[in-house]
Image 1: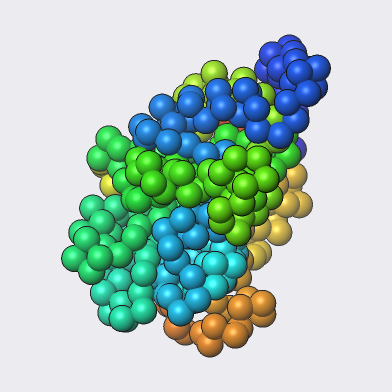
Image 2: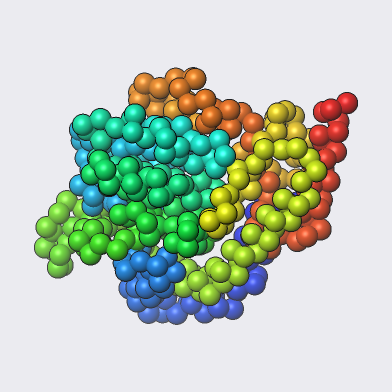
Length: 369
Ligand SMILES: *Cc1c(COP(=O)(O)O)cnc(C)c1O
């Protein structure tokens, strides 16, 4: 039996510190924002290499506020990808703007910069790349297109805590970066959580206002805001986890390397991280021609695998109104049909990696015969 993720194993490792931090927060009665959240914001800003971090109540809220702070709203278009979790698209729609999709690059599985300019119209205001599975999109190309056309860049870094592109961290290259601390993410709270990071003080100030009812001072509402604040307890948990995030990330990378080596003899397509990037492996994905059969065989053998995500956003019923259809994004659709996510988390043991690979080999042999 190999689970897809083991959050209990991680809790056992940090239990005394987490328990103490949570109790301290309850006793302090700082239940919403407060000193634990403020301390976490400082540490996470440092970790990302940015000046400002604003903690919010989910990654979706982070995206929504980043868009609003950048002045995006009804009548605007935001270029993004369909190869993502629906939250990326949903946040654009919450802002009132229209999501415009482009396909992904077949090598990195992230936004293909060569397709962006053809999607730009007079209404385009922003580019919203997604650092899918923990690998950063081609930010140099995206930033230069944005600069030429006067567009804002918002990074969806919900899966990419600590990922790097040419030595710069996820969230620090675009105008704004958005993170999720959903429990299963690389840095997970014990409930919902998210953050917006930026180097621009005016954007930071807007996000801070909007997450807390647009209050400049108590009951003085200068903007129509939201209740998107982070809980004190989540800040306390995340502060403890900040002590471990680098070690955990290195463990994920070691597990991925172990998979890479063991899978080298099987010919499978995987996203290829460019040499200048630090992939943080929120997901370890590979393409299998008979994905569904292999996936069932692995599940039967006790290996918990996943698909992130089986139906691209542009083919989801909820977003049919955007007017896209089958065949619009061939790479995205091809990957959605073929790729499988293997178990990966810092506590995954080498024997478990070996077990996953041996079951995968067995399933492949059965199919080939
Ligand atoms: C998880 C995720 C989100 C949303 O984050 P929540 O904290 O669940 O709201 C947004 N984008 C991507 C790519 C994600 O993986």
